[in-house]
Length: 319
Image (cartoon, rainbow, N blue to C red):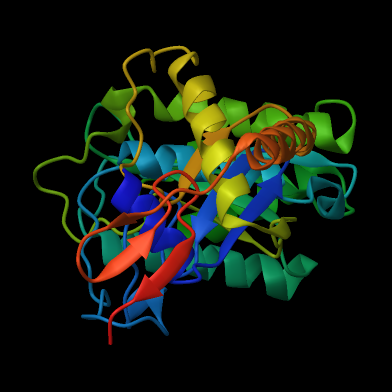
């Protein structure tokens, strides 16, 4: 631990915190929220190392669930308008088991809505029924028309996109339910918690054996997460991470959580990330100030460098 702390200080690592309603992400530059090194391709474009482009999604992982909850809680739901609703799209008795085709259906429905009513704003989640058929839950703002008008149009559009020949699917393929929870920030938390709890129903997230090209399980349309990014010092990041790990262990189902090793990044889910970050950052600054006031540097050497084993201050390094 001492050596890792020394390396943090001596290499001038950059730390920052990303804060939203959904939680706090503590990161070191070049690392993801769980301390996993990022690379040069795919979602990690710009960092050194092998490309991650072309990775295949096979399941709805625990980290993806947490990431979904944090992102959904950070979305500005007030931009969706006053008429938010849960719109569900299901498949007929005969359905495709190819995820690529399901994604084309989803994007085709999005384009039809865009051409008819304007770009949709909201989020979507993929689930599976007991019979193995995929279905989509979308939480979006309804257009400024009567609800029954939109529902009738959506049923016909989805029926045509899927290419169904079952007349029952024309009347049962789409369901619309109005849902909005109070103020914008309260609505964001309630929506994020709902999808997160639903993601815990593993029987709906288990990918059937015959289903191929799974793809993403969730996403959002027309919205950008509202995240505040703040730079923090190395010593403050260490103290913040220690407290965040303690809070993580006290969350339900996380009593034995160890978190990422070393001093890399992590993610902490919260009901009010802004308030929690202010409390944690204030605590970290107080601890760092107290340690600096009490600390007197000593030196330790490994024959190459000499450093303080407490604060990591580097005294000299051999050429």
